[in-house]
Image 1 (tube, rainbow, N blue to C red):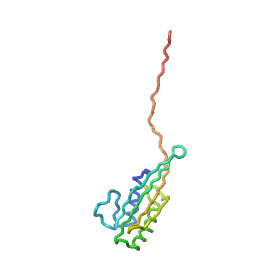
Image 2: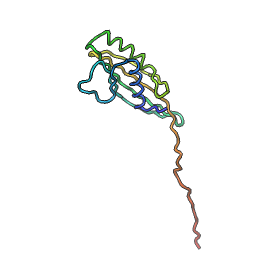
Image 3: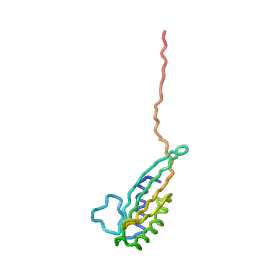
Length: 143
């Protein structure tokens, strides 16, 4: 159970690849002459908050942009928006299902832009190392 921002990005890419067969999913730099239709996933922000005991809450936000086959195709964009919401609602992060806390799709300038935020609770594991060695203390007698 990794729950890192990069593992969530991989889980999103895998979910998109499964739902949108034969559509390229880019997670790195977009090639200058990339072919459409295509998805481009960008990590937007990451926050980590302390909770009770050794628990932490990780919050990761991603922007997923869909570039349609035909520019400004309203039907294709509407279909993609609905499928994006369905696909991003729950993703499989290495066997652990993770639900989007906040999910929104905006259609603008001929593309569909989805924003998905995922919260994960993790427990910090204490180190097994001994941080201090045994201290041997001797007292000198003054005489």
